[in-house]
Image (cartoon, rainbow, N blue to C red; front, side):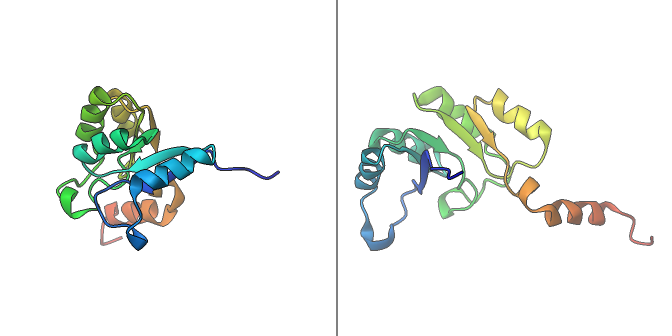
Length: 138
């Protein structure tokens, strides 16, 4: 069975796009194709701008991964809370989620939904944590 994408996610930061593509025009093309557009953002201002441009959802995917957000080291709960209280579009908590408790906190912060990535798709990271927790003389 062939599946079709329903949402197309784009870098919604202030960074330059290949070919200097205009972000608003990209969102319009996504909408013309009958798809939803999700902005992967890192800061509050980028989330607000994404809604103004016409994105249908924002995700905190890039929080902690850009120069403007490098101080963010864990899940962006405060960013989720601020955005969910300000925006009319859904806010997705994505990035740095490692435990069920963090998933609960994301929802308590106002997330529409939560994306768990590396914690389940890269078992070697989980294994490494267990190995590091073991006594070194064993």
